[in-house]
Image (cartoon, rainbow, N blue to C red):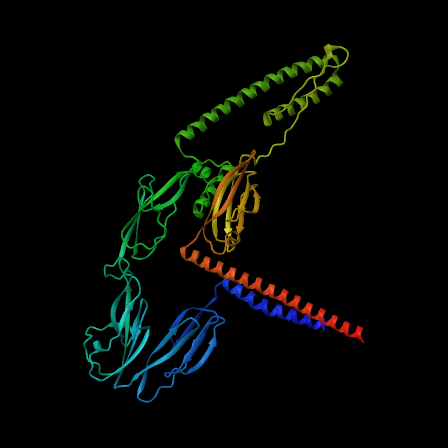
Length: 552
């Protein structure tokens, strides 16, 4: 009996917890969407994203459902010809999209002597009975003015109706000159629209404008012609010891051109900054422009390889003076070496008089040691020399020289480019940091998730979703440098934004979570109460049986 009771309790808890978990999951994540394309007579009548789980229904003119399907994936559906009673024609397809269903129904109209088909092309739609459609068929009497049966049009934003057209024998569009002409036969007409971003009633695709580039280097300029609404290909000039910061719409460099569509004659101004300043600033502020990041990386690489960077006359004069000083130093060093060599030769001759074999051998070793010492002094400059007297006669003191080498890391003091990319390998930002600098990647709540140490030019991939909350809108990464004792640490943290709608949604989601938690607590409490009641019941029942046995 007890086993049956435990089994029933487990089933009860499972039946309650599973629906609750599904409900909680649905409240935290929105419905997935899929593209659906509906076609009739090789014409697309609907193509949009629809929530997963929505019911797609095809009905007849009376509203009876002919086909129905639950959307679970991207769907392309060809609608069959509907049943049309005698004396009627199909005018258009009416599409009603509500919360749970997408209903597609044919709209019929009475057939008359002449049938006219209307089709809207790119940039607009047709209006019939307050419904938008790209395909419409009407039936009218012969001799009716065309203007009386033309449907209204609904141009999209920044588009205008060019006019109504028909097709000639060569399948070319030909504009209808007289819209009041009488309809005498079946025909097909097309509503053609044109883009007009600058609202001057001229087709943007044929209107030319000029973009002028002012490089701000040696009075260099360039002009390029484009059509209204197009973007211009931006040149990227080079200049030694400078970083090109981009093209701006004003001479004060307040508004940067953001590759948007250009609708009028425009002048763009090139902005430059000294490379050292940009490199220094990039240690504190993340660089979000990949082109600027690439320029800095190239500049640092050239510095590390010793490639000359400046073409300024002042810098060349300094280099020349440095070279002259170096030549003088080399000359003095050579003279000094020559004097030392003469002294060594003299000492060698004196010692050869006393003992030719032994002293000659010692002198060779000594010369080798002196040569090594000179080379080490020239190359390292960190030698430690000390002298000791020999025991016995002080006149025969020997000189002992010891070279002490300190480990030298050539990377110390160098600056390296650290580039950050997202999970899809898209550039996020970059930093220029010194060798050995510690990097901490923080969540928006301030918790450290990852740590790195700068050793070389490096690429780091970040999954942005791991560093922001679900309800936050990611803007960019920001950086700052803090000091802990004597150590500098660069912190990288996401900058986020909350939309008012998101705040309201968050509040609703919070309420849903609280309700779910409350339901869970109540369910668990009721479950425990049920268990206790069952245990008490069985205990009392068992005691009653025991009392009956004792009485017997």
